[in-house]
Image (cartoon, rainbow, N blue to C red):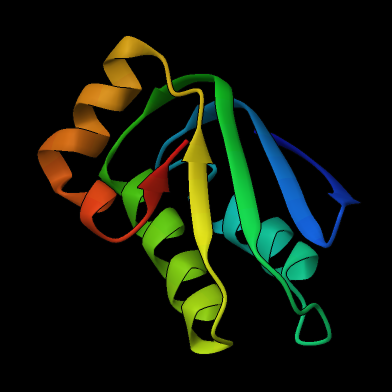
Length: 101
């Protein structure tokens, strides 16, 4: 899993590339936490368009980052999930917490 990040108009944009499963969940969590540091204040958009596979470990990674962002009073959004990943996100109910763009 590769994570790229950039800030535009006060929004932190994170792009995930690859598979988000139990093999890479811990490393991905650390990388995202580094991007969403304690000094960053603003909304976060996670681009999922290049995530080819995700399992429940990936859901845990997203929910944990959502909690960090929400604790600061900011919002997190998910963008571009493919059909399979989107189905998992819908079934999990994650869209009731994290808005889909």
